[in-house]
Amino acid sequence: MVSIYPITREIKLLAGLILLIILSVSCNDTQVVTPIRVVAELDIGESQDIELSNGDMVKIGLLQVDVVRDSLRNAIRSAHVKISVDGKEATIISGNYNLPVTVGKVQIDCPVVKNYSTNSRREIWALEKDARFRLWPGGSPYIAPGTFVYPVRQEWLASMSQSGNEPTYVDWGESVANKEIYYHEGHDIGGAEGLDEILSATAGLVVSANGDTLEGYDDFPGDIRKDVVYIVNDLGWYLRYSHLDSTDPAIKPGTRVKMGQRIGFMGKQGGSGGWVHLHLGISHKETSTGDWGIEDAYPYVWEAYVRQYNPALIAVARPHHLLWTGQEATLDGRKSRSFTGDIISYEWTFCDGTTAEGALQKRTYGKPGEYSEILKVTDSKGNVDYDFTVIQVYDRGDPEKTIPAIQPAYHPSLDIKPGDPVTFLVRTFNTDVGNEVWNFGDGSPQDTVKSETVDRRNFTKGKFAETVHSFSAPGHYVVSVERSDESGLTAIARLHVMVKNY
Ligand SMILES: [Zn+2]
Image (tube, rainbow, N blue to C red; front, top):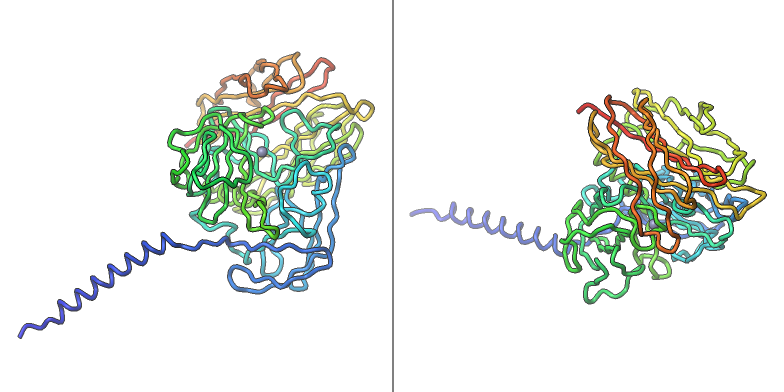
C-alpha cells in the first residue's frame, strides 16, 4: 500500500504557506499602526501615570514653566519646563530645535506650552492644559524605522529654517510693530527655487494636490491651494507640503505614494512671504480637544536625516535672535551633536571679525541689520561641521525702521565634488538699492549680483539672483553674501558648502 502520508504532509505544508501569505496580506491591509510616542497634557502642579507604547508605566509631573520673551515684540523665545519623571526632576526646553531628552526610562520633549497662546496669531496646537509632552520609551527611535524619510534631497538645513514655534523671520524680517506672533509650528526648510526636490516623507494617500481634493475628504487642517499637497499616512497624520514651485504630475488626489517619492520642487508659491522653502506641517486630531493639532516634526526629520545620510556630526546654532541695538544675545551651540565621538570645541567667528571659543557666547550689536554668526564644531574624531545664528537687530531709537533681510541658497548641496558647478541663489527684502556680493570663502574674487526688488503684495513674482561657482579643492567652505540698503544697513547670510573627493 502506498502511504499517503508524504502527500498529506505536503498538502499541509502548502496549506500552511497559503494561510501565511493570506494572513500577511490581510495584516498589511488592516494593519493598525500606532506612533511610538504617547502624548500627555498637564497643568502646572499636576502629575499623571502614563503608559508608554512599550507598556511601561511612568509618573510624570509638571512643576514649573518659565518663558523668556524678547523686549521688542514680547514673543516667546524659549520656554523652560521643569518636570519630574518617576520622581526624577529635569528641565527641558520647548521646541526651538531641541530634541527629546532622556529622563529616567523615557525620552521626553515638550512641543508647546500654553503661554504661546497669549500672543499667537492663531490657535494651532489644540492644547488645553499648560504643557504638552511626548514620551518615547528610553532608547527607542522617535518614529518607526522605514516609515519616514527626510523630505528634501538636500544637505541638513542647507539654507534658513523656521521650526519648533520659532517666530517667523526669514523673508521681511520680524516686524517690531506686529505684536501678533506667527510662532512657526511647522518645519520650514529653505532651499533652491525649482531645484531642490521635495520627497514624500511617508507612504500615504494624496488627499489634495494642485488645489483639488479627494472626494470624501473635506476636513483639512489648513487651506487647499495649488501649491499645497496633503498626504495622509498610515498613522492618520496629515502631512502638508507647501509653497511648491511645481507639483509632480504623478501626485494627484487618490494616488498612493511611496515613501521618498518625488512630490515636486521647492518654491515660494502661496503664502510663503517670498522666501523659497518647504513648509512641512504634520496635523492630526489626536488631541485632547478633538480638534486639529500640530505634531512637531523636528525630531522626525532629524532622525530621518541621520538614518539616511549618516552624518558624523551636526552643528546647530539655531534658532535666530531678535534684538534692539545695544541689547545682549546669548548664542548657543549646545544643540549640536556628534554621532561618532564627543564634541571637543565650539569656535565662533563673528561678523566684526573677532572669534571666541565655547558653546555659549554673549553678543551685542551697535548697528541695526541682519547678522549671521559662524559656529564651527569639532568632535573627538576630528569631524567638523558648521551652522549659523541669524540675528536681526533693530534701532531702539527708531523701531519702525526696517532692516534689509536676505535669503541665500545653493544647489546641489549633496555630493559636491571639486570642479562641480554649484548654483548660488539670493534674494534681499526691504531694499531696492545696492547689489548682493558673494564671497565663496575659497580665495576666489567676489561675485556681484542683483536680485529683483521684492514687491510686498506680489512676493511670488521674480526669481532669485543666480550665479554659478565651483570649488577646486575638497573642504568645508563658509560662503557669505551681503547687501546694504539706502541707509547703509547690511544684511549678511552664510552657507556651509562641503566639497568632497568621492
Ligand atoms: Zn512654514
